[in-house]
Length: 495
Ligand code: MV4
Image 1 (cartoon, rainbow, N blue to C red):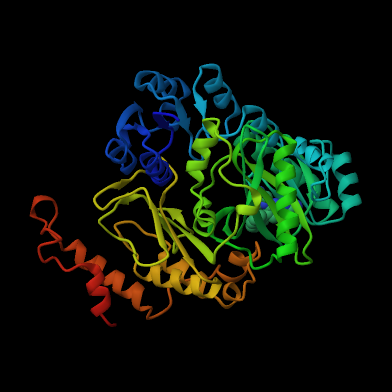
Image 2: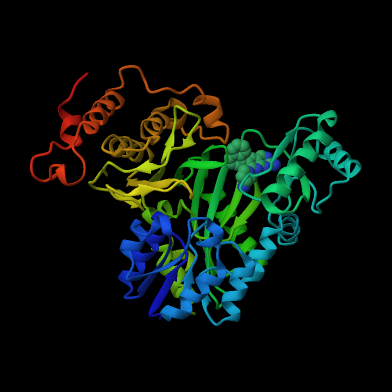
C-alpha cells in the first residue's frame, strides 16, 4: 500500500480524500495557491506544498509544479479529486510515464470517453442503448438537417468534446437548426477549444439517473447502484439522492448491467459514473461517462456502506475489489444537498467572502463534507462549494424530513447560501411525490423568494444584523465564554 499520497485539489473534496488516507495510515500532501495558504485542506494535510498564485494555471492546473511537489515530498500517488486535472488524459499519462500512480482510470479510457461520438459508437457496439442521433461529429448543415429530419424535432446539439451540459442547444424546427448549430459550435470552441458538434433527439422531460461503477486491474467490475440527479440548475446539480424513485429492481438490474458493459467496453479501471437519461416510459439511454470520483459520491457511500475513496486507493495499488456484485445492497435512502456561496436572490451568482459563523447539523444519519471553517475565506478564484450535507434514513420520506431538519440547523453567516431555497425544494409537493425530472427547477422554482414571514430567514437576518455589531479580532468575545450562539437565538427567537 502507498505510504504517501498527494491530493491535487482543494476544498471539501481534498479534505474528504485526506480523511480516508488518514484512516488507512497513508500520509497526505496538500498543494495550495497563495489565496489558499490557510485553507481547510492545507490545515487537514500532514504536509503542504505551495504551487503558486491563485490562477488555476499557476496552481491546481499546473502539471509541472504538481509533479515537482510529488518528487520533493516522495509521494507515490496522486488523487486528483474532481475538476482541475481529474479528467485530463494527458496528465494521467504523464503520471504513468513518471512512475507516479494516478488514482483514477487509465488515460486511454479518459480519452475515449471524452470523445462523445466515439463513446456513443463504443456503447452501440456493446449493446448499451444510446439516444437516437449522430455517431460522428459534423458541422455540415446538410448532414445535421438530414439527421434531424430522420430522428424528428426537437433535437439537441451537443459539443463532441464536451460534457456536463456545456454548449448544448435545442432546435425545435429545421429553420432554427443552422443558427443553433453555429452558436453551439462557437460555445464549444470557447469551452473546449474544439468546435465539433453532433445532434441527438431531445428528451425534454426525463430523469438523470447515473450508476456508480468500480473496476479493478484484474478484470472485475461492479456497479454500486444509482444516484438520481435530476434536480439541476443550469447543469449544476443541487440535490442528489439514491435510490431513484423511478427504478424497479428489474430496471435497476438492467441499467446496472448496461453500466458495467459501458465500463468494460473501454477497459475501465477505478471509480467512474455512467450517466443515463430515463424517460417517463422507463426507456433509458446512455449519456456519458464521468471518469472521476463525483461530487455526489457520498449518497452512494451512505447506502452501500462502502468508502469509495478507500476502494479507489486499493484498486490503484493493484488490490482486487473487496466485494462482488452480490455483496452490494443499498440500505434505506440518502439525499445530498450542495451548499455553495451563492445568492439565490441574485440569480445564484457566486458570493465569495469570509465565513463569520458556521454551524453544521448533527445527529443520526447526518454527514457533512466541508472544506471551510469559521473565520476562513471563500476565494473568488474557484468553485464556491462550501460543503455538502448528506443524510440517510430508512426511506425517502424519512430522508426528506431529516434533510429539512438538518438544513434548518445549518447556519452559515458571512456569505449567502441557498440553504433556505434547498429547504423549499425538498418541501415541494412535486419533489415529495418523486416527480423529479430535469425540468423541476425551471418549472417549479424560478420565481422563488424566501417565504414571507419565514421564521428561519427572518431569524438568520436578525442574527446577521446582530453579528455586524459584534467586536472583531482580539476584542471578539470567546464563543465558549458566553457569546450567545445563533443556534440558541434561532431556537428562542420568534418573529
Ligand atoms: C440530454 C437531455 C435531453 N435530451 N440529451 C445534461 C448534462 C449532460 N450530461 C447531458 N444532459 C442532458 N442531455 C438529450 N438528448 C437532458 C440533459 C439534462 C438536462 C437538460 C436540461 C436541464 C437539466 C438537465 C439535467 C440533466 C440532464
